[in-house]
Image 1 (tube, rainbow, N blue to C red):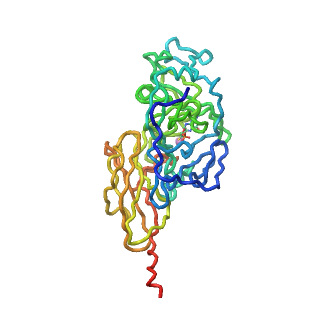
Image 2 (image 1 turned 60 degrees about the vertical axis):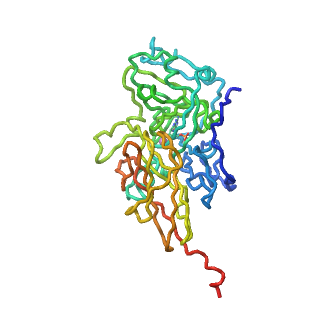
Image 3 (image 1 turned 180 degrees about the vertical axis):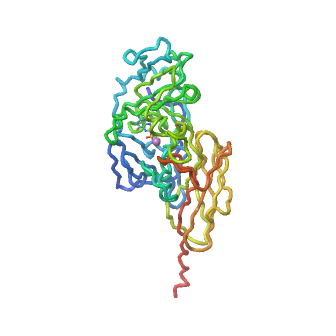
Amino acid sequence: MADDVHGPVHEPVHGPVHVPEPEAVHVPGIVKPLPAAWFVPHDTNAEMRWDALRDADGGAAIGLHVPVERFFVRNHTRTPLIDPGTWRLRLFGTGLRGAPSADRPVEFSLDDLKALPRTRIDALIECAGNGRSYYASRQHQRVPGTPWALGGIGSASWYGVRLADVLREAGLGPAAVDLLPAGLDPHYVVGGTDYGPVRRPLPVAKALDDVLLAYGMNGEPLTPDHGAPARLVVPGWVGIASIKWLGSIEVADRPLSSPWNTDFYRMFGPGHPPGGGAPLTAQVPKCAFELAEGAVLAAGRTHRLHGRAWSGEAAVHRVEVSDDGGRTWRSAELHDEPRAHEWTRWSIDWRPGRPGRYELCARATDRRGGTQPRSAEFNREGYLFGAVVAHPVTVAAPPAPAGDRA
Ligand SMILES: Nc1nc2c(c(=O)[nH]1)N[C@H]1C(S)=C(S)[C@@H](COP(=O)(O)O)O[C@H]1N2
Ligand SMILES: [Mo]
């Protein structure tokens, strides 16, 4: 009875479930099956297909949370298989009372963590590079890295223990300023450089505020691809903060660094400070259609367009849709109470008159007034693409009524 969760935590899937086609994409290092109907492969990563969240006829849909088997995967290297029985989380450093060293750390087994108060949060995890492909395809700007469309994101109900509780249990001292959570996956090696294990400093203030040390997702124990036996979930921040397969946390009384807050995940290039901007934290507002790019819709009929909108740290409370390239906008209907760290589902009726090619645009605004610009500010690594993404569709003449065929 280790991983029972109280109450339903998994939103039911309404209506007939979309049955995946038998073809699968292959991504080295990812353990779960990757049906081609659900995922687009990129190197070691699997992107969620937005059109797979809803049946082609606009009907049955996936609920608020993305089921584990459909959740995107972002791996720097490969998914490790870790024995939860022998796994230990190790904490050490000058920010803990007694300043335990790395070879004499404070240790927690999975059972130790489960003995602490269990808590649950709904939160999105979104890659900082989500939307990156649009720098090239919409702004003619070349950037390296995984060419995500908008599917480098997912929402889930996570459960585990507050990182704050673990830190207090480990003897957090008053002088602690930075943590360095590190993963147990293989070292990240590119271009002949060994960057070591995936790890990124996290300020103590954020850690104590709302970070979860999760051991479950959508009512089930974490699966290997999503960080089993335990990972961080850092609400509102770029996905890299949510370290998977957590093995250790250094707690220091001074600022820490790793390549993930010096070389990567900062804004570089013209318009940014020399040496890069501050390490990225909050995500920016975005919006997506639950519709295939290039979908074909009949003219002269009313179509219900659906999508989701989200932002890093504030709730999205307005979504507008345009069918004329952003000249005029209409407000969409929202289907969720706007909440921070969670997306808001929306829909709007659209009745295209004439056949032809259209570009549908959707724009999110959050409670802090953050909204989506027409173009995203260039940065060398292509992070935080927050501009409105025009969604091409084809409107076709409806089939002629039988009598017209004579
Ligand atoms: N140890 C480790 N943690 C990691 C990563 C990784 O490669 N190794 N990728 C990070 C990035 S860049 C993202 S966007 C999220 C993705 O989480 P997911 O694969 O569960 O969707 O995990 C983060 N945590
Ligand atoms: Mo990421």
